[in-house]
Length: 266
Image 1 (cartoon, rainbow, N blue to C red):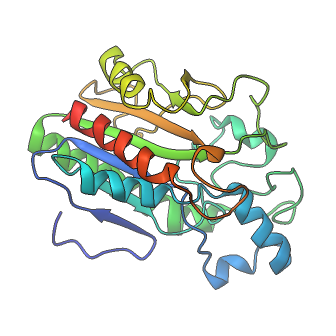
Image 2 (image 1 turned 135 degrees about the horizontal axis):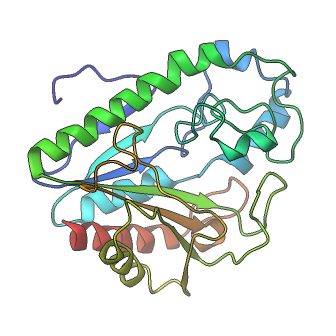
């Protein structure tokens, strides 16, 4: 895998050969290719506002800081394009509950449920060009960790706003400083306990509220218990000015906590 050409849409950053951990950063970027931009109906100012709301700003920096601080560097899989191109963590079919608000693999609505793409927009070309290659590369990364170490642990690095946005289907529940998203098959109790300890210094953590679940490539999802997964959702006011503002001192502390989690896993 080390000699594979790098895609401009995503990047696999190697870690320690013996580490099973993949830090997955799917929503940190704002880049939108020109051809994709033409299919978005928002004007430039409105698009920038939407990107402020929808982007998990600075999460790639948190993951990079954790990789530098960890005793055994994790691998990092980083999306280099905005989730407004495609969202690589959605189901690409009718299983995706976010279709109810126009936010399947290809979004047609904004965070405020306004029009992003025209009604009837055919998202299949975007899925073919961006979603499937991303999924295949992430699957290959997991396969590589399994071959090298006998297991793989995907830690999703996300953030979320301190106040719910209209698109959220489960926004009425608790919004702790750190939300830990779990999967009943892929999140063992020990992994969750490690995360609760690592992120214990930010005012409390919660489980599966306001966001639940954890990303696993479909080839392994619900099938292979050697693949562990956990989603880290950091409330944005813990480390940045909302929406879309600069990072603050909380970023380094969060990177340190993530490094502690990586070391506990590895």
